[in-house]
Image (cartoon, rainbow, N blue to C red):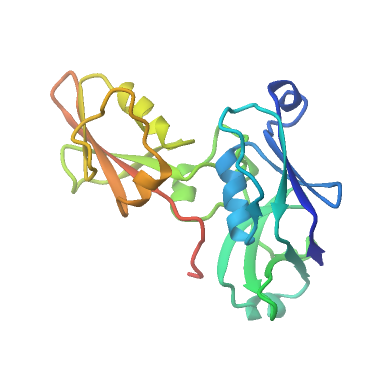
Length: 247
């Protein structure tokens, strides 16, 4: 089935209050298609399906806009395990189907159209994922699961913590919504703070990091923090990829 004539609505706070936590809703042929609680969930969804926005989303969050989505994609419902295992995806993800988060495989057809493959809900052997840990409108989103590349939801910036040096065990700490949240996170730390593996030696007043800044520092950057007790914390800030490999 081909999904076409897609449009995006960016909601105002009053419109948002009438939803289940969504700020961005997508329609296909005038009918409800999908929705997102975070902008970066929307962007990843578009990227995975080879879609683009005809114009940028308003910079100010909560500004109403109605934007055409350029492109179309296909959907396929798979009914047998043999057929599912025979699909060799270009990339994988996880998404909603029939109220549950399930695996998705993506391929391209002979015309180059991205096709999204999901298992029929009647396939009792299909794997499902905890809704509380997958939804980008839930506070209990699982950083560990996201770090392993399981989800196509929530933000793309993961902050992990290590103590004393770069060789210690890394613990996923939190998910950030946007690059400027890196500065806000650093400002929330009590004590001295500096950046490593970046052009800036420290945070310049008023500077806001961009997505391009992060992409220029593969695979991560670090925040070195010395707390009030002279203990050193190393925070790794990692830009997570859009597409998941077939591993």
